[in-house]
Image 1: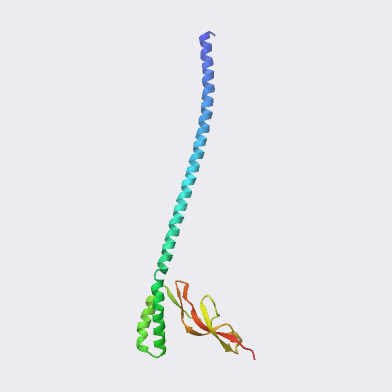
Image 2 (image 1 turned 135 degrees about the vertical axis):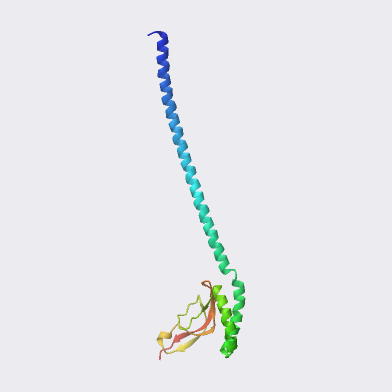
Amino acid sequence: MNKEDEDIVIEDDLDSVNYAEKEKKLREKIKQAETKAKEYLDGWQRSQADFANLRRRDEEAKLEFIKFANQGLIEELIPVLDSFNISLSLDRKDLEPIYNQLVAILKVKGLEELDPVGKTFNPHEHEALGMISTEKKEQDHLVLEVMQKGYKLNGKVIRPAKVKVGEFISN
C-alpha cells in the first residue's frame, strides 16, 4: 500500500468514527427534544383541562348567582304573602285568586313554602316561639302550630317558619 492509499483508509476510519459519534449525539438530542416536546404537550393539556374546569366553575357560579339574584325582591314580597294569608283566614275569599297568582309566580322563581305541621322540629328551618303541652308521646318535638310561614328560595331557607312545638307531659 502506498502512502496515498493509507491516508484514504485512515480518513475512512476517522469518518466512520465521526459518523458514529455524530449519530450518537444526534440521537441524544432527538431524545432530549422528544422529552421536552412531551413536557410541553403535558403542560398544554393540563392548561386546557384547567381552562375547561375554570369555564365550568364560572358557568356554575353564574347559574348560582342567577338563582338568588331575585332574593331581595322575593324577601320584600313575603310580608305581602303574610298579609294575604291573614286576609284569607278572615274569609276574604275574593282575594284568593290574586294570592294564588302571586304564589304561582314566586314558585316559578324558586320560592317554596315551608309546611312544617306534624314534622319534627328542625332549627335550620323553624324558629320555636313556644311549646304546647301534649299528652301524646308521638307529638313530642313535633311542630303542632305555625305562627308564621317560612320560605325557602331554591332550597335555601330565607325565612324560618315561626312555630310552636309539642312537649310531651306524662301523667
